Length: 178
Image (cartoon, rainbow, N blue to C red):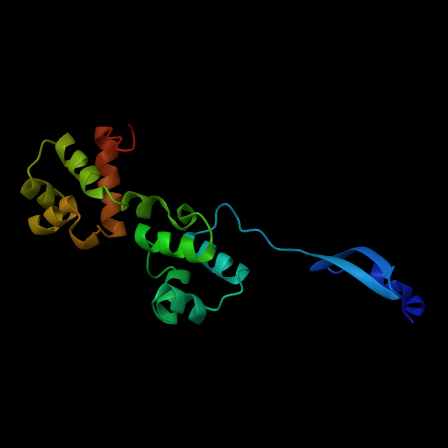
């Protein structure tokens, strides 16, 4: 019956391509290769999360259940409303079987454990007290102190991160060296 439709195995479809077809016990077997799109190297952490979730055939609801949060929590990650900090990246990496580093950007890498000492290193380069450094940043001293002791993952916001990076660049601070 398939002989009368010889064009079936020659039609091009970008989603899949027939690579092998042969008869086995009187049946026609067709081997398919499914094209799995690759994620761009320039993709944001939010786009990467969505890509790996869909690659594992998980809904936001299912990933949220495995993660211990609601679908909305995952949706906020995927929309880029909430940054994916290191602890969450590790949990997502375990669930999705990928390296957690793919979910981090420069800001969230800065906010990895040890960010308090990185902030302290910037402050020390200016030879300022916590109070004086906080005034320079436009925040109160308590907030700066919480950052330096990494109290309950109290991270600087992204906007403040950019201020800190400018201050670090102005003094040539390199806190990622050994």
